[in-house]
Length: 276
Image 1 (tube, rainbow, N blue to C red):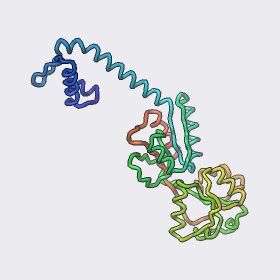
Image 2: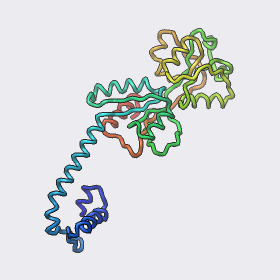
Image 3: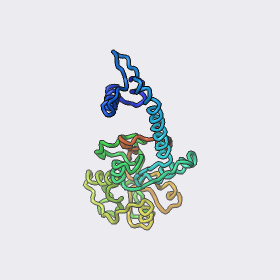
Image 4: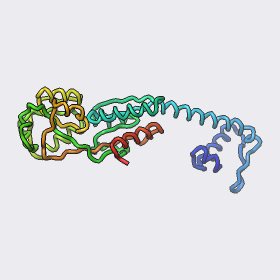
């Protein structure tokens, strides 16, 4: 019984209960139990080959489903972090070409909700208290630097040093609702009683950079997301005194543990963010 218990990942009382249920159902004795010794009856011996065959078929079915699951990796990613994660996904495809990667971008809170509903195998989001106890957290980065960007013609670009108070009455481009970046920024502005003029709420990072480059307003973005644009001079970094950073986490549903390909992707993300 103990060996059957180990193989089936069931407790010994549960295994005994299943045997007794079979015996009652067919009206025939399958095992003799004396003290701690269990032996098969003649009927039990006859049934044993069929039981072994069923067990092997069940294991084969389990392996088949696991293989199918590992062929697709579903990833949800916050829009703010999408550029980095898409780059990681490209490296992942080179290393594991047989695994299909599906990426869904969206505001952090939306991605968290979808992961809670098991629409993603894992989610990469900004670190906040989302209050979702169905999800486990894997820490990736303790603080990615965020910067305010503007057009070179923006009035704020003429100052050598800025404070959040300088945004009072200034045009500001915000991320869309359910964005963690939006929440972080609005909270900091509220703390300092700053009231900018919100001219747009945009859910596309590239559109944000485009509007800023056209001189429509300033925006708070991840420093890593504008590395390609800054050298060309179309965008500049505003010299704010405030050091604003966000952490990055991977979230996984407690009832949907990562398969081997998922764990490999997590390792690649942590390596990219230099998290051991």
